[in-house]
Length: 201
Image (tube, rainbow, N blue to C red; front, side, top):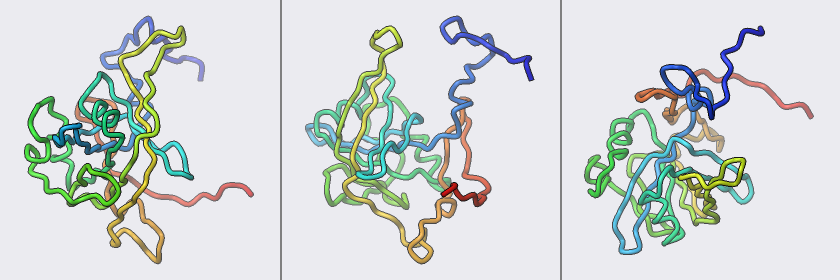
C-alpha cells in the first residue's frame, strides 16, 4: 500500500477529527484521586495514562493544563490510581466535569481509606495503586519550547486487588472489565478478546 493519508501535524491533519489519540488506542484510564495541601478531595480521569516501569512499579499520567490533580501531586507528593471498570463508567465520566465540587460526592462514590498515602481510594473499584510522586516533567516540543502539559510519574507503594480477579494467584485482566479510551468525544471500549502468544526465549 502506498496511497496513505499523510500529513505533518504542524500543518493540520485535514480530517474532521484529529486521529492521533484514536490511533494510539485504546488507552487505559488514569482515574486519579488526590488531596490538596488543605485536604480537599479531588478525583479525575486522565486518558493519557500508562505504566512505565516494572521494579519499582511506576505509573504516570499527563495533565493538559495545570489542573488540580497536578497541583495536588506536586504539593503533597501523593496520589491514588483507581481502576475504572464498565460498572463505574458513568461515575468515572461524571468526575471529568470541570468543577470546584467534590467529585466523589458529585458522582455518588464512596471511598476507602488508603494505607500508605492520604488520598482516598474509590470504593467499588477492584484495583487501586497508592502512589508517591517521583517526577513531574513539563513536556516540550522538538525545539525545546514548553508545552502546556505535564507528565506526572509516581511509584506504586501499595497495591489493592479484589481477590475475585485472581485465579490461583494469577491476575485475570479481562475479568475486571476495565474500560479503555478511544479517540472520539464519547469513544470508549471494554477490554476485548484475549489470545496467547509467548515471547521468544
